Length: 248
Image (cartoon, rainbow, N blue to C red; front, side, top):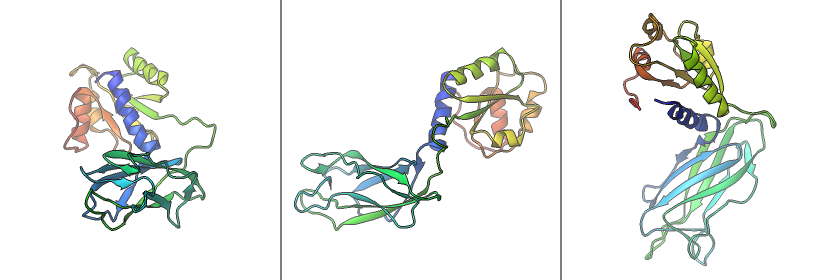
């Protein structure tokens, strides 16, 4: 796995951890001719809709179809900052895959977000009765305005050398805050305080003598671990993880 692949993996993890949070969807009728996913951040609620062929929703009132709507429910720590952003569609009809975005404003100290998505689905012959689903989630508060939020990476190596310095410099150039620790000195608290732990390894069995024993005793952590190479495989097995993404 090269440095570019590491960076992509870490950015994907960070997007989930610090950006959009997935929302739980409750009450989607079994006969709804669509699939739906939703996520939210401190700034917006996003709904991704994909209609089955031949079906559509309404972007606006066309004299008979109920337009899509998203409303914030009572008890949420948010309110709508602006009206729902809806694609224009074709003649007011939304087909295929499209996205709805509701700009948000935090209105309370809590993290709860609860919203209702209402719609009417029609095909060329009939319209189904109006439907609605509930979207629920917890959105952590962002850092104070003006304070830069950086992904904290703990780079764990067998020895701090020119290789670990190159990796650290590479991540630093891309805006990641990197701390280097060896397998001998890494602690659970350091892992837990990091957004991502990168457990590095040199070429097959080229690490410092005794590294494998230290990897097998690697502290358990709730932080995501990106495990690389031979020592990474040993670490994954020691943690009892049954499946990984394999080698790149």
